Image 1 (cartoon, rainbow, N blue to C red):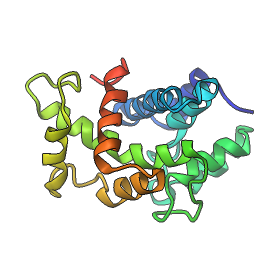
Image 2 (image 1 turned 120 degrees about the horizontal axis):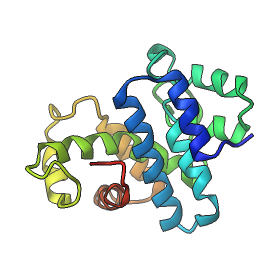
Image 3 (image 1 turned 90 degrees about the horizontal axis):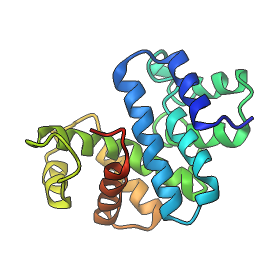
Length: 185
């Protein structure tokens, strides 16, 4: 079974009550949808969004087993193995050895941490929005390892490498994806 984005969000709410985790799921889901359309996977946009929504399904309740427990939870709910592999692969080299293979999995790997960092930069701005955010502002904060320290620069850079993109391209595209989302501000 491959849940729709709405079904995925309902499942996310079953295991996550915190506003942060629910909002993060929506943001990553909408960013993934944008990338699906941008990269020519329009017919798979719902799937990409669903994976984005569900990627941290287990994080709030099982942070020590992140990307491990979620596989079990998704199987219990009858999720297709493609969803399970995709969501778990964003924990590659951190908590699991499931390497991102499909371009969608590589995008998820790259943007998960980056959306958090971009969001942190945005809320520091007078507008508190990505609408007027530019690459140079993100790059300045990116270099400050104390800023949004929980957002792994190593993972972001590894994700850009997996995609064959420069860091600037990844950041610029992710800003555009977040701007296009109604879930970000």
